[in-house]
Length: 250
Image 1 (cartoon, rainbow, N blue to C red):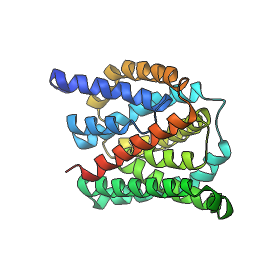
Image 2: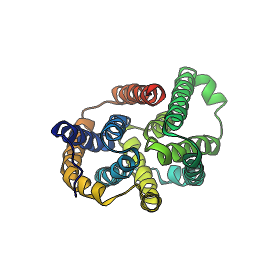
Image 3: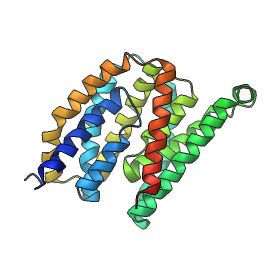
Image 4: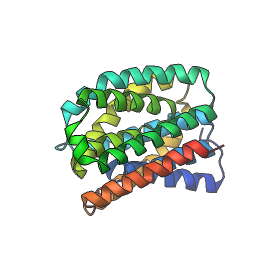
C-alpha cells in the first residue's frame, strides 16, 4: 500500500522526483535537494531505497541522451576505488548514526570543493605538477563510492572530479550518467538485502516516475542552453550548498 502522507508531503516528493530527472540530464549537484526532501518526508532508510530506484530511472534517460559522450577509460580507472569506497560505506553505516554520516560527508565535500578551486586558480603550477591520473581517480573514486553508499550523495564529489578533468558539458554529463547508472545498479541488491527498498517504496516510485521523466526531458532542454562557464559555476554553487546542508543539518 502507498504510505499515508499529507498532500503537502506528496507535493514535495513530486518536486523532488522532477529534480532527480533534471539533475541527471542538466544540473549535477541539484539532486541534494531531493535527498533532503525524501529524508524529511519518509523514514530515513526507506527514503534512501525509494530515491535509489528513481535515480536509476533518471540515469537511463541520461545514458541514452549522452551515449556518444562517454569517457570509458575514465570509468575503468575509477572502478577499483569506487568498489573499495562502497565497501567502506557499508562498514561505516554499521557503526555510525545518521548525524555523524551526514557531517562526515559534508566535511568531505567542502574539502573537495576547496581543493578543486585552489587547483584551478593555479593552473600553471597544476600543469607542471599534475598528480598521476590514477591517484586522482583513487581519491575521488573512493570518496564517490563511500558517499553514494552512505547517503546517495556522490554527485557533488564526482562533479568536482569531472570539473577538475576539464570535461565539456556533454562529456561531463555522459560520463557521469554511466558512472552513476553502474554504481546505482551495483547498490541495488545491497539495498534490498538491508531492507532499504520496501513494497511501499516501490509503489511510491511508480507514482513518482512520470515526474522524473518530465524533469529529465526538461533537463535536456536546459543543457543545450548552458555554456561551459555557466555550467561549471552552477555545478560548484550547487555542490557547496549541498555540502553545507549535509554538514549543518541537525
